[in-house]
Length: 105
Image (cartoon, rainbow, N blue to C red; front, side, top):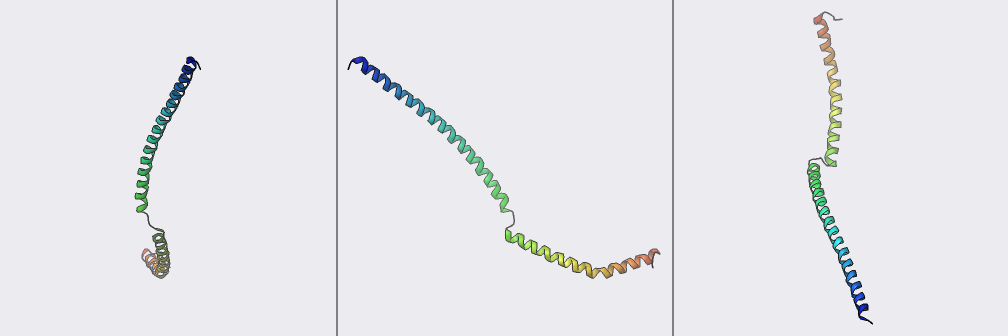
């Protein structure tokens, strides 16, 4: 082999090494940018998750909601009984008012 063949082979090897280095450097920079963006996104999501957990902590559990529903149902029944018991009183008050205003029966 002649010396210029060695020079040509060395030139090809150096060119390939430079190409591989530039590809690796570009991918490393892109990976670093991507990692930075992911860290920022992770921090933002962590903040949002903390806020959501804080809000959820104040909400009642399903058992507590069921208890409230049952108590409201009981109160509705008690109000019906109360309105039935006060109906005669309301009628008497209306009769007295009609008598006093002169529009009575």
